[in-house]
Length: 353
Ligand SMILES: NC(=O)c1ccc[n+]([C@@H]2O[C@H](COP(=O)([O-])OP(=O)(O)OC[C@H]3O[C@@H](n4cnc5c(N)ncnc54)[C@H](OP(=O)(O)O)[C@@H]3O)[C@@H](O)[C@H]2O)c1
Image 1 (spheres, rainbow, N blue to C red):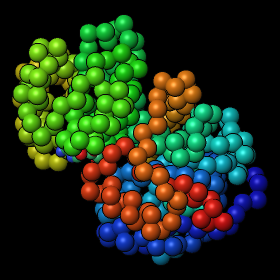
Image 2 (image 1 turned 120 degrees about the vertical axis):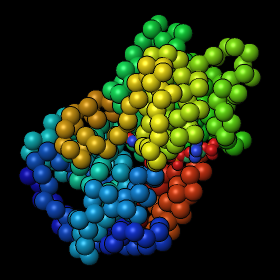
Image 3 (image 1 turned 30 degrees about the vertical axis):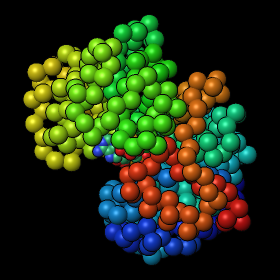
């Protein structure tokens, strides 16, 4: 194995529970590279709600943090491989890769060590900033559609099928619209503000409705063109109210997937009467359990190919040079839940040079 850098520099926290302003410069020992890991020098990262939830609540990292082992946010990144473990296949030093990461030392750092099966080669046609948006949001949509909702990627099978994407102007929603169009579905996205509505149209939605109103009322605008949904993909918190609104427009045998979780106990009677399947997307779980890791790489390779074929377009709305201040500002914006597309920080390697 190659000689590795001994220290890592990053922006992180040494205690969970604070706001974004608790993020500070940290330096810590780089753990030894595991045989299946690649060491990536980070170039760009995009910000995700999960980073803020981990900083606030610790979640599965709660017992691991200390002064010498800070938490560094950044559950995805893009950069150059500077070292590889002895069991790594298909990658070499110098390769430009993008990856998903669920551990303590995320991508707001000079280096991130990640299992090679959680990475893929960057699409040739994209800038690093554009590539930095792929894994969490496009990955979650593709994984949930294909592994949990059983959506066939066969436009002829989906010619008469409809999907409702709740939160179509956000990061995951704007990715999901595009992936649903590749599958050949008719896509109705929801948005409640002019800027998110515009973004949902730009991402390829066939119809846009307002999630502040009952969906059944909104559908009346379309003169019967869309009467109900075979699939519902909810990127917002699942509540009793939202489940009822979904139940009202779900077709018999429909499939509902939530990725933000159930935030209160809810009665799912509306789903029962439709013989619905209710699924839970959880993109980080396989990495945390160290199971089926190769499926991340498979999904990322598919997404990279679709970007290079111009079947997908990047969903960035804000790009800034990496700094502690930009990271704090960005995470505050993500926590407001008013993002349009993705917030990206570039030149991470230059900041830590
Ligand atoms: N389980 C998983 O695998 C997984 C993976 C990725 C993300 N997530 C979670 O999924 C959620 C969305 O992630 P994201 O990256 O897309 O977040 P995001 O980009 O910050 O989402 C912002 C969007 O959410 C919409 N929104 C806010 N409240 C809403 C509501 N009550 N109903 C409908 N839309 C609402 C807003 O639309 P308007 O401004 O138009 O209202 C806004 O455009 C987060 O909770 C995240 O942690 C889970």
